[in-house]
Length: 271
Image (cartoon, rainbow, N blue to C red; front, side, top):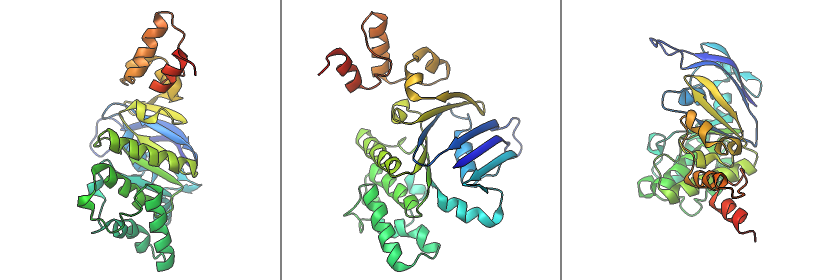
């Protein structure tokens, strides 16, 4: 479990903390959607989870290991994979399989096990068959999945992603979300930063940050079921949720947990 206890973080020279009194837990096999306006502290929060940053006050631990323990930094980073918004910033290999192998190879993983890890990671994100493909020949969605595979090859217990779908079209976004759903089913704990609430409708929890503090912590269904509350937090609800809310105000019985097009259609015309 990743645990943050009353965490405060202040960047050098900053007038106010980027995070102020944040406490939360990330459990294996569960997904947390992390939302909030620019400057709310989202990226700072996920960088604290794998010791890229250390808290000014409070504590961050990964499976009981304090991130402030210098001797355990690489253990922590192997347990908490990190995927950036722009995959080009973390792809280093000349072909896909070399990029995936880069992390575990540098940790001294034996060749036989390395081959298995690379194959398993590429399969997990749907890139089997593209092992020898040069990264610049991949689509943006494939690049992002390659970046995820590179993190998975370290066999992390947790995966934190900083807006992994921000640069993708609809097809690329769907591919990445499908890959994350499959990883969650395999027991990987996921923290997914996004500006798109629809990307995390299937999450176990949604946390909204505002000015470095937790402004909302609950289920995505509860949040989208109350569009006025979501709006007050600066969160845009999906158009289908706006439609469902309008139908309810007209007296049409659409359940509040109908948050997808399929769910709304099913409530109107049960099969």
